[in-house]
Image (cartoon, rainbow, N blue to C red; front, top):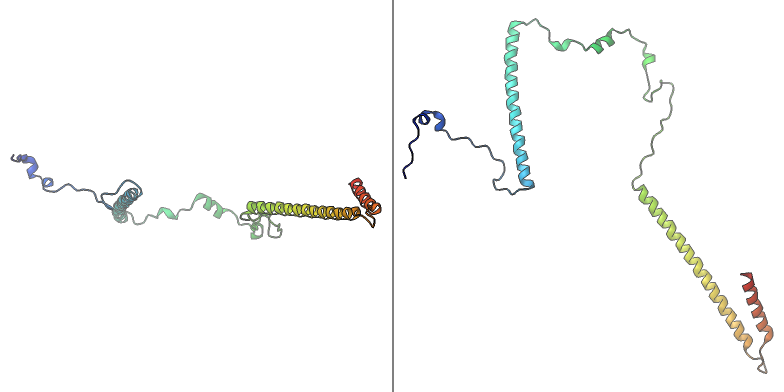
Length: 200
């Protein structure tokens, strides 16, 4: 098919000969959605924002230069407004001067002669809570160790006493010259046993 003939009025305008401007691109065009694409978009927005700021600054500067040239030609005798003092500052300057001894105040809030030590919060110790818990666990472990050592010492003592008692009874039960039991020795061992049971 043949292409259509353009309209007469669009053919004469110079904008038809120009191509429409595309925007500028930052980064590769085929980025997947995610952090890289967002980063590129952020960079592009920042560049656009900076360009707008520069353009507006240039306009303001141009206006300022134009206004300065016109105002300087019209009225060169005017004072700038920045020389006027703030009312509070003007009142301070107009006030009578006070002696400097009364106005000197120390950093702590009193006069220069009075000094009170400031109470400060204690410096925070890092891992203080963990250190307390570790100390508590250490003390508990030491108490358990001492209890275990005490119980093992008592157990060993009872075993030794039981063994000594068994040997003494075995020796007492062995027969004498004629095979009779030695009641004197046996009675001493039994008496010791009774004393121990009554003592407990």
